[in-house]
Amino acid sequence: MYLGEMITKDTTHRKDEINMEKQRRVMLKLSGEALAGEKKTGFDEATVTAVAKQVKEIVDSGIQVGIVIGGGNFWRGRTSETIDRTKADQIGMLATVMNCIYVSEIFRFVGMETEVFTPFACSSFTELFSKDKAVKALEAGKVVFFAGGTGHPYFSTDTGVVLRAIEVEAEVILLAKAIDGVYNDDPRVNPTAVKYDEVSIDEVIAKNLQVMDMTASILARDNKMPMWVFGLNEENSIVNTVNGKFNGTKVTV
Image 1 (cartoon, rainbow, N blue to C red):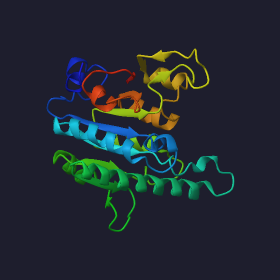
Image 2 (tube, rainbow, N blue to C red):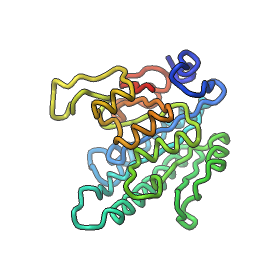
Image 3 (spheres, one colour):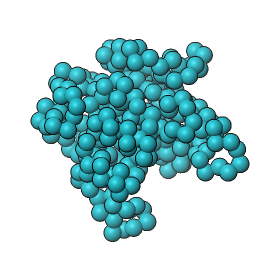
Image 4 (cartoon, rainbow, N blue to C red):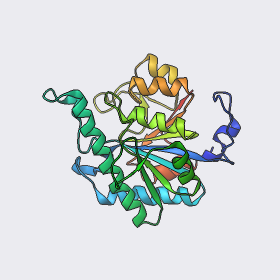
C-alpha cells in the first residue's frame, strides 16, 4: 500500500476521513544524530544530501512535506546537571534552528524551494510560525521546516512534530530513526528484541515502548495522528516508505 492509498483504504481509526489523493501531506521527523552520520556531531553533508534527494523525489510526485529535525547532533541539555533546565532546553531549541537552516540550504541546492518557521522571532533568519502561512507554503510545493520545537522548555521535538502535524493537518508522521522500527526492547542492548510490524498507540503508551516521549505519544493518541517508524540509514528508505515498500513499524491510532 502506498501513501496515497493509506487513508482511503482504512479510515476507521481517523477522526477525519481526509482523502490522501486530494491532500497528500506528511510530516517527516529527522534525527539530528542521524544527519551527523558516523561523526555523531555536526553535519555529514553526504548524508544530508542523500536525504534531500529522496525528499525531492516525493515532492516531485505531488506529496507535501513538512520537516522537524531534532537537535541531538549539537546538544542534549537534559543530561546536564549544571545549568538551569529552561536554559538547557532553550539551547536545544536553537540547535534545531541551526539544523533546519543548514538542511534547508542543502534542499535548495538539490532543487527544492523551502521555508523555515520558528515559534519565536529569529530576526531575518526564519519566519514566525503561522498555520496559514505554513499551509500556504506547503500547498505551493515548498518543503516547510518547523524549527525551535514548541518554543517552550520541557517539551521535546517529539512533541513539536506531533503538534505541527496536527496543526497543518498532515496525514501521517514519518519517523526516520537510527533504529529501523519499534521493538519490545532496545535492540542495541538486547539482540533478542522483537520488532513490531504494527502496534497501536495505546500499546506504545501502556508498555512505554518509547517511539516518542510520553507527552508526544498521548498527544498523537488524543488527536489520532498515526506514525510510521523506519530506519533512515536504509537505502532510499524515505522514498520506499512513501511508496509502500515499508520495512518499519506502523503505529496505529
